[in-house]
Image (cartoon, rainbow, N blue to C red; front, top):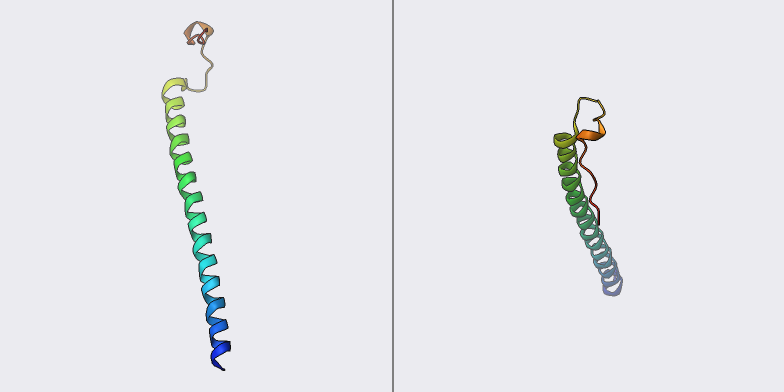
Length: 70
């Protein structure tokens, strides 16, 4: 293996490593976004359970909060 061939292989490995780093960074951003969404959804579900859990029964309209009118 001569010097030129070794250098070409080294450059190819560096390029591959850079591509992997970019992919890992992109995946990390996606996971972070999903974690935020999951946290938000968990809070929404908790709110819904706390405020609207009637044991599977539908509340009468007289107990429902009216919608805001603009």
